[in-house]
Image (cartoon, rainbow, N blue to C red):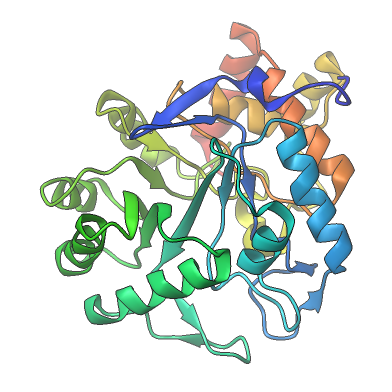
Length: 302
Protein backbone atom coordinates (compact mmCIF):
# COMPACT_ATOMS: atom_id res chain seq x y z
CA UNK A 1 0.00 0.00 0.00
CA UNK A 2 1.11 3.57 -0.61
CA UNK A 3 2.40 5.20 2.57
CA UNK A 4 3.83 8.59 1.64
CA UNK A 5 0.65 10.67 1.83
CA UNK A 6 -1.41 8.79 4.42
CA UNK A 7 -2.12 10.80 7.55
CA UNK A 8 -2.91 9.41 10.99
CA UNK A 9 -6.36 10.95 10.62
CA UNK A 10 -7.23 7.95 8.41
CA UNK A 11 -7.28 5.78 11.55
CA UNK A 12 -10.15 7.71 13.12
CA UNK A 13 -10.26 9.20 16.60
CA UNK A 14 -11.10 8.33 20.20
CA UNK A 15 -11.48 10.50 23.26
CA UNK A 16 -9.36 10.05 26.39
CA UNK A 17 -11.48 11.95 28.87
CA UNK A 18 -11.68 15.35 27.17
CA UNK A 19 -8.66 14.76 24.89
CA UNK A 20 -9.26 13.63 21.31
CA UNK A 21 -6.50 11.45 19.86
CA UNK A 22 -6.01 9.72 16.53
CA UNK A 23 -6.12 5.98 16.86
CA UNK A 24 -2.65 5.52 15.41
CA UNK A 25 -0.15 6.97 17.87
CA UNK A 26 3.55 6.61 18.53
CA UNK A 27 5.34 4.62 21.22
CA UNK A 28 8.66 6.06 22.37
CA UNK A 29 10.19 2.94 23.95
CA UNK A 30 12.43 2.17 20.93
CA UNK A 31 13.48 5.78 20.41
CA UNK A 32 16.46 6.13 22.81
CA UNK A 33 18.40 3.18 21.38
CA UNK A 34 18.87 0.85 18.44
CA UNK A 35 18.22 -2.82 19.05
CA UNK A 36 16.72 -4.16 22.24
CA UNK A 37 15.10 -1.65 24.58
CA UNK A 38 15.28 -1.40 28.37
CA UNK A 39 18.69 -3.05 28.74
CA UNK A 40 21.76 -1.65 30.49
CA UNK A 41 24.14 -1.85 27.53
CA UNK A 42 21.78 -0.49 24.86
CA UNK A 43 23.35 1.28 21.90
CA UNK A 44 22.14 4.87 22.01
CA UNK A 45 20.37 6.17 18.90
CA UNK A 46 21.65 9.20 17.02
CA UNK A 47 19.95 12.25 18.57
CA UNK A 48 19.18 13.98 15.29
CA UNK A 49 17.55 10.84 13.90
CA UNK A 50 15.36 10.45 16.96
CA UNK A 51 14.31 14.09 16.89
CA UNK A 52 13.54 13.89 13.17
CA UNK A 53 11.33 10.82 13.65
CA UNK A 54 9.31 12.54 16.36
CA UNK A 55 8.81 15.64 14.26
CA UNK A 56 7.83 13.56 11.26
CA UNK A 57 5.29 11.66 13.37
CA UNK A 58 3.55 14.93 14.22
CA UNK A 59 3.73 16.03 10.57
CA UNK A 60 1.93 12.79 9.68
CA UNK A 61 -0.89 13.67 12.06
CA UNK A 62 0.10 11.64 15.12
CA UNK A 63 -1.13 13.41 18.26
CA UNK A 64 -0.83 10.62 20.84
CA UNK A 65 2.66 9.77 22.10
CA UNK A 66 3.33 7.12 24.72
CA UNK A 67 6.46 7.42 26.84
CA UNK A 68 7.97 6.82 30.29
CA UNK A 69 10.86 8.16 32.35
CA UNK A 70 12.34 4.63 32.40
CA UNK A 71 12.65 4.65 28.59
CA UNK A 72 16.32 5.55 28.29
CA UNK A 73 19.69 4.34 27.02
CA UNK A 74 23.12 5.40 28.31
CA UNK A 75 22.99 8.67 26.32
CA UNK A 76 19.32 9.22 25.46
CA UNK A 77 16.04 9.71 27.34
CA UNK A 78 12.74 9.32 25.49
CA UNK A 79 11.15 12.11 27.51
CA UNK A 80 13.96 14.56 26.88
CA UNK A 81 14.00 13.69 23.16
CA UNK A 82 10.27 14.44 23.04
CA UNK A 83 10.89 17.75 24.83
CA UNK A 84 13.70 18.69 22.45
CA UNK A 85 11.79 17.72 19.33
CA UNK A 86 8.27 18.93 20.06
CA UNK A 87 8.28 21.69 22.68
CA UNK A 88 6.52 24.05 22.73
CA UNK A 89 3.82 21.42 22.42
CA UNK A 90 0.82 21.80 20.15
CA UNK A 91 -2.56 22.19 21.80
CA UNK A 92 -3.80 18.89 20.38
CA UNK A 93 -0.75 16.81 21.30
CA UNK A 94 -1.45 14.23 24.02
CA UNK A 95 1.53 12.72 25.84
CA UNK A 96 0.84 9.67 27.97
CA UNK A 97 3.41 8.32 30.39
CA UNK A 98 3.74 5.45 32.86
CA UNK A 99 4.80 5.23 36.47
CA UNK A 100 5.46 2.34 38.80
CA UNK A 101 8.61 0.74 37.36
CA UNK A 102 11.99 2.43 37.78
CA UNK A 103 15.60 2.04 36.68
CA UNK A 104 18.71 3.41 38.35
CA UNK A 105 21.15 5.61 36.36
CA UNK A 106 23.05 2.52 35.17
CA UNK A 107 19.85 1.14 33.66
CA UNK A 108 19.25 -1.60 36.23
CA UNK A 109 15.67 -2.17 37.33
CA UNK A 110 14.73 -1.19 40.87
CA UNK A 111 11.64 -2.26 42.87
CA UNK A 112 8.36 -0.76 41.72
CA UNK A 113 7.44 2.52 43.37
CA UNK A 114 5.33 2.49 46.48
CA UNK A 115 2.35 4.80 46.81
CA UNK A 116 4.59 7.31 48.58
CA UNK A 117 7.18 7.24 45.80
CA UNK A 118 4.80 7.83 42.90
CA UNK A 119 4.78 11.60 43.28
CA UNK A 120 8.54 11.63 42.71
CA UNK A 121 8.09 9.65 39.50
CA UNK A 122 5.34 12.01 38.32
CA UNK A 123 7.56 15.01 39.03
CA UNK A 124 10.44 13.36 37.15
CA UNK A 125 8.23 13.04 34.08
CA UNK A 126 7.11 16.65 34.43
CA UNK A 127 10.71 17.86 34.60
CA UNK A 128 11.95 15.79 31.67
CA UNK A 129 9.01 16.72 29.45
CA UNK A 130 9.05 20.36 30.50
CA UNK A 131 5.39 20.46 31.46
CA UNK A 132 3.34 21.70 34.40
CA UNK A 133 0.91 18.77 34.16
CA UNK A 134 0.79 15.34 32.52
CA UNK A 135 -2.02 14.56 30.07
CA UNK A 136 -2.35 10.86 30.94
CA UNK A 137 -0.51 8.82 33.55
CA UNK A 138 -0.78 5.02 33.47
CA UNK A 139 -0.05 3.04 36.61
CA UNK A 140 2.00 0.06 35.49
CA UNK A 141 1.13 -3.02 37.52
CA UNK A 142 2.82 -6.38 38.05
CA UNK A 143 0.73 -9.24 39.37
CA UNK A 144 -2.86 -9.43 40.52
CA UNK A 145 -2.70 -7.70 43.92
CA UNK A 146 -4.75 -4.66 44.88
CA UNK A 147 -3.97 -1.40 43.08
CA UNK A 148 -6.05 0.73 45.44
CA UNK A 149 -3.28 2.35 47.48
CA UNK A 150 -1.08 3.28 44.52
CA UNK A 151 -3.94 4.31 42.25
CA UNK A 152 -5.36 6.35 45.10
CA UNK A 153 -2.04 8.22 45.37
CA UNK A 154 -2.24 9.09 41.67
CA UNK A 155 -5.86 10.16 42.09
CA UNK A 156 -4.70 12.65 44.72
CA UNK A 157 -2.12 14.05 42.27
CA UNK A 158 -4.90 14.35 39.72
CA UNK A 159 -6.96 16.35 42.19
CA UNK A 160 -3.89 18.53 42.79
CA UNK A 161 -3.67 19.34 39.07
CA UNK A 162 -0.43 17.49 38.26
CA UNK A 163 -2.27 14.87 36.19
CA UNK A 164 -5.21 15.37 33.83
CA UNK A 165 -6.32 11.76 33.29
CA UNK A 166 -5.46 8.34 34.69
CA UNK A 167 -4.98 4.94 33.12
CA UNK A 168 -3.71 1.47 33.98
CA UNK A 169 -1.12 -0.80 32.36
CA UNK A 170 -0.70 -4.57 32.50
CA UNK A 171 -3.88 -5.11 34.50
CA UNK A 172 -6.74 -7.55 34.92
CA UNK A 173 -10.48 -6.79 34.97
CA UNK A 174 -10.77 -6.87 38.76
CA UNK A 175 -7.98 -4.30 39.08
CA UNK A 176 -9.72 -1.99 36.60
CA UNK A 177 -12.94 -2.26 38.60
CA UNK A 178 -11.03 -1.46 41.79
CA UNK A 179 -9.41 1.61 40.23
CA UNK A 180 -12.68 2.89 38.73
CA UNK A 181 -14.18 2.93 42.21
CA UNK A 182 -11.48 5.46 43.17
CA UNK A 183 -11.22 7.73 40.10
CA UNK A 184 -12.10 7.73 36.38
CA UNK A 185 -9.94 5.55 34.14
CA UNK A 186 -9.57 6.64 30.51
CA UNK A 187 -7.38 3.83 29.16
CA UNK A 188 -6.01 0.34 29.73
CA UNK A 189 -2.61 -0.43 28.22
CA UNK A 190 -1.93 -4.17 27.98
CA UNK A 191 0.08 -6.58 25.85
CA UNK A 192 -2.22 -7.71 23.05
CA UNK A 193 -2.12 -8.59 19.36
CA UNK A 194 -2.74 -11.40 16.89
CA UNK A 195 -2.16 -14.59 18.85
CA UNK A 196 -1.29 -12.67 22.01
CA UNK A 197 -3.66 -13.10 24.95
CA UNK A 198 -6.79 -14.32 23.17
CA UNK A 199 -8.12 -14.92 26.69
CA UNK A 200 -8.27 -11.12 27.05
CA UNK A 201 -10.71 -10.66 24.14
CA UNK A 202 -13.64 -10.27 26.53
CA UNK A 203 -11.70 -7.69 28.55
CA UNK A 204 -11.03 -5.70 25.38
CA UNK A 205 -14.76 -5.65 24.61
CA UNK A 206 -15.66 -4.74 28.19
CA UNK A 207 -13.35 -1.73 28.09
CA UNK A 208 -15.17 -0.49 25.00
CA UNK A 209 -18.54 -0.95 26.68
CA UNK A 210 -17.27 1.19 29.57
CA UNK A 211 -15.95 3.92 27.23
CA UNK A 212 -12.33 3.10 28.12
CA UNK A 213 -9.62 3.05 25.46
CA UNK A 214 -7.73 -0.21 25.08
CA UNK A 215 -4.14 0.46 24.06
CA UNK A 216 -2.20 -2.69 23.10
CA UNK A 217 1.56 -2.69 23.36
CA UNK A 218 3.77 -5.07 21.34
CA UNK A 219 0.96 -5.38 18.76
CA UNK A 220 3.67 -5.83 16.11
CA UNK A 221 6.47 -7.36 18.18
CA UNK A 222 4.22 -9.98 19.77
CA UNK A 223 6.28 -12.38 21.84
CA UNK A 224 9.43 -10.53 20.74
CA UNK A 225 8.63 -7.80 23.27
CA UNK A 226 11.50 -5.42 23.93
CA UNK A 227 13.62 -7.13 21.26
CA UNK A 228 11.15 -6.29 18.50
CA UNK A 229 9.37 -8.44 15.95
CA UNK A 230 10.84 -11.75 14.85
CA UNK A 231 11.64 -12.30 11.20
CA UNK A 232 8.85 -14.79 10.45
CA UNK A 233 5.16 -14.24 9.74
CA UNK A 234 2.19 -16.60 9.81
CA UNK A 235 0.69 -17.72 6.49
CA UNK A 236 -2.62 -16.04 7.28
CA UNK A 237 -0.91 -12.69 7.90
CA UNK A 238 1.21 -13.04 4.76
CA UNK A 239 -1.85 -13.80 2.62
CA UNK A 240 -3.64 -10.65 3.80
CA UNK A 241 -0.47 -8.61 3.36
CA UNK A 242 -0.08 -9.78 -0.24
CA UNK A 243 -3.71 -8.97 -1.02
CA UNK A 244 -3.25 -5.38 0.13
CA UNK A 245 0.37 -4.95 -0.96
CA UNK A 246 1.09 -4.26 2.68
CA UNK A 247 3.64 -5.53 5.18
CA UNK A 248 2.86 -8.13 7.88
CA UNK A 249 3.41 -5.39 10.48
CA UNK A 250 0.76 -3.22 8.82
CA UNK A 251 -1.67 -6.13 8.81
CA UNK A 252 -1.07 -6.72 12.52
CA UNK A 253 -1.74 -3.06 13.29
CA UNK A 254 -4.85 -3.00 11.11
CA UNK A 255 -6.23 -6.11 12.80
CA UNK A 256 -5.65 -4.47 16.17
CA UNK A 257 -7.62 -1.38 15.17
CA UNK A 258 -10.44 -3.57 13.84
CA UNK A 259 -11.00 -4.95 17.35
CA UNK A 260 -13.13 -1.92 18.17
CA UNK A 261 -13.32 1.86 17.79
CA UNK A 262 -11.90 2.23 21.30
CA UNK A 263 -8.73 0.30 20.46
CA UNK A 264 -5.69 2.51 19.86
CA UNK A 265 -2.25 1.60 18.52
CA UNK A 266 1.13 2.94 19.66
CA UNK A 267 3.75 1.31 17.39
CA UNK A 268 7.26 2.54 18.03
CA UNK A 269 10.25 2.94 15.74
CA UNK A 270 13.34 5.03 15.15
CA UNK A 271 13.15 4.55 11.39
CA UNK A 272 11.28 7.19 9.31
CA UNK A 273 10.19 4.65 6.69
CA UNK A 274 8.79 2.32 9.33
CA UNK A 275 7.04 5.31 10.88
CA UNK A 276 5.28 6.17 7.62
CA UNK A 277 4.26 2.54 7.15
CA UNK A 278 2.88 2.32 10.68
CA UNK A 279 0.81 5.45 10.21
CA UNK A 280 -0.46 4.18 6.86
CA UNK A 281 -1.74 1.01 8.54
CA UNK A 282 -4.52 3.14 10.01
CA UNK A 283 -6.03 3.37 6.52
CA UNK A 284 -5.95 -0.39 5.86
CA UNK A 285 -9.47 -1.84 5.78
CA UNK A 286 -9.73 -5.61 6.08
CA UNK A 287 -12.57 -7.68 4.60
CA UNK A 288 -14.82 -9.90 6.69
CA UNK A 289 -13.11 -13.00 5.28
CA UNK A 290 -9.67 -11.60 6.09
CA UNK A 291 -10.74 -10.74 9.61
CA UNK A 292 -12.18 -14.21 10.08
CA UNK A 293 -8.89 -15.77 9.01
CA UNK A 294 -6.85 -13.56 11.31
CA UNK A 295 -9.31 -14.04 14.17
CA UNK A 296 -8.89 -17.80 13.86
CA UNK A 297 -5.11 -17.41 13.96
CA UNK A 298 -5.47 -15.20 17.02
CA UNK A 299 -7.70 -17.72 18.79
CA UNK A 300 -5.05 -20.42 18.41
CA UNK A 301 -2.57 -18.29 20.34
CA UNK A 302 1.07 -17.49 19.59
